Structure formats: C-alpha cells, structure tokens
Image 1 (spheres, helix red, strand yellow):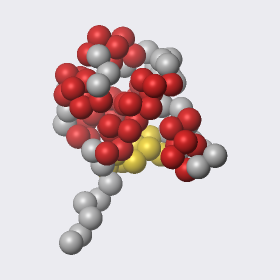
Image 2: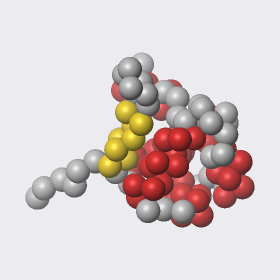
Image 3: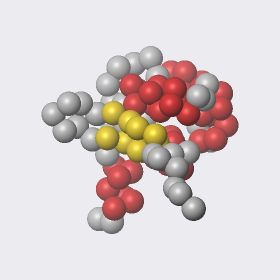
Length: 91
C-alpha cells in the first residue's frame, strides 16, 4: 500500500476536525465548501466524540481538504491523536 492510501485509511476523529478548523479559522460552512462534504454531514459528525463514523469517501475528502490547507494529522503516540498547522514553506 502506498503512503497516500495508508494515510487516507488512518482514522479521523471529530476532535481532530474541530481542532483543524480552529487552526485554520474556518467555520463548518467553509469546510463544507472546500471539502465537498455537505454542511449537514459535518454538523452530524462533529459533535460525536471519537473516530468519525462515515463512509471512506467522506473521511478521505475531509482529511485531504484539511491537509491541502496545511493541517498535519498526528497519530496516537502515547499522548493521543492531534493536529498541527504546518509551517509555511520558505521561498
């Protein structure tokens, strides 16, 4: 399995989505517009703690959109999953 497929298969939690939106200063509507996932779906998924329970296409769209905006997902490493905003690349 290549790195992209492996990354897309990793879990995504509602806490990570909310934290990523906060780092990007996006509201739910902007995430919906950028990801192609409906606002109703985002509103349904975010309040439920733990891994997002949605189809793989929805999870992949959310994750890909946030990564393209500069979010890095941090896997469980003893301290819990998380997100961080990637440093801008220097020209």
